Image (cartoon, rainbow, N blue to C red; front, side, top):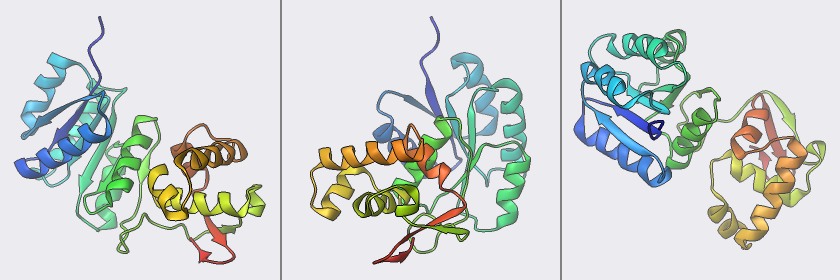
Length: 220
């Protein structure tokens, strides 16, 4: 019998580790969450429980420890999604994490929905390296503009997609536009079909490098 999938949180600050673990449990109720406070605890835990589905590692452990651990986990757990969590805005830190072989970098100041979206993307096998957002919203692309019409979407679908790009779940989108949640789900199905995507995360990934423009709201 194969071991149950689990998420691993490594942070030497107990309150932070506990907070991240509780957040993951609320978002991934079917997945167990293991917490470690020291790098030396990780490999024995992996030897006992098997490779985690995802590992979230605090960048500021002992000097270089996070990057060294990522290299070790890449060797011992090639199927695991490995991400660093940090409150550091220095782009050099993100680049060091990328070069170390991590699959993602998540900012601790990210809004909950953005953090959840990042975890979902990583679990789907996608990379997540986003610059920090100081506006409280997920980062915006500043590349090629695109309108809902150009994507084959109605204006309402474009409005819903704009909120999806901000990390809002269906329930929040329904409240925003005074719609039923089932109506939002119907719109989402149509949006995914038009974008050739199977999931919200894949849809967001397909739109990276583009900026959505709604005539009444401007760039998003």
